[in-house]
Image (cartoon, rainbow, N blue to C red; front, side, top):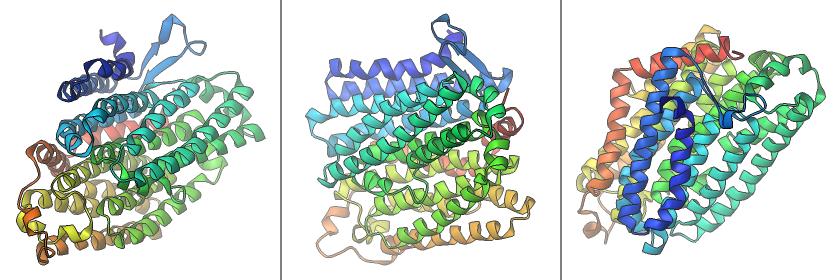
Length: 495
């Protein structure tokens, strides 16, 4: 059984998705989906332990050896991302039944869980596979199901948000496919490890440079890196609350993984950050994204949309770490990948509780909530402090590593800008605190804000918020794993 863990990671949710259509009853489908996610989490934990102890795992599908056959290759980088995706999926699904029952009609709920599992399987497949074309296949599985999940939102604008994401997502996937096609034309292989061995002698080839450009732009579209982020705010703000929490905690993290995988292991760090001026480009786009998105977030009245723009800013921090390109900087990126998943997972689940009680989450609905929904608001405040980077939260840990990496390279301006960018987060988090604790409820809304969020949503939200504090104090697990993974990326990328 242990030998088949890499394929089980993907097969479990992929086979479970159509099974949901046979169960039909909403509660049973939710329990089945939750059980599948728990099983996937158990598999990812076993994979992470095994890889950390013994090194990368190679799994040959159908008995065909790589590069002729499809290979699933699990190393510390994707084992870490698999753990994040499965853990956050499980936490979000714990709250799903309560939220979905309120936001979706009964005849749509089974379809919701089917699409959720397809998206989940696609994300896990992207991370687990060692075949470049398989990346595109799983990317399409996750993307198509994501478009449908977003379109399930109650607001009619959800259809427009899904269509907008479909257009931009299709462009991004097409770019990635074109780039993979160029690589295959030049190397005759689709296996990532084989590509890593064959690309260096071709590094001066215009075709390889073009392939890199297509793949890079395609991944940045999926990542929502500024200025290719226009699909993300509408998608997050219009989708059902559970979909927003799931996508914010996982989808962009998988796209960031792809950027790391192709930049450092397929094309190689010398090609990406030395042969090309990618380091300057990533640092520049990342910092501009931090300031532009944070500034726009301050003026948003819809809080889901506000935190969506905040996600664009947080992606900027991660990309800056990739641009700096040292072990410490990559560790900061991998730490923030984990930490941001905890932050946004907890925040969007808390917002799901607000939507459940109030029917929306606009800033005027936050007035007086500190008194009427104290636990829900406390979760949002703690998550906001983590976004800012307050000490004793996970946000402080990853930003400390990022600033340290910038100082090590004497990028003093970058270090200062990271700190200033964090101060912008104070502005939009304070807006919520002011409305909730220092303003009275709007006229006519007093009766609507008497009840706390349901425990089915509040407990999973607080589980993630508590993790923001726990891993901000006891940093051993994320720091040890990300340190080893970042050293692997720079020192063992070609292994």
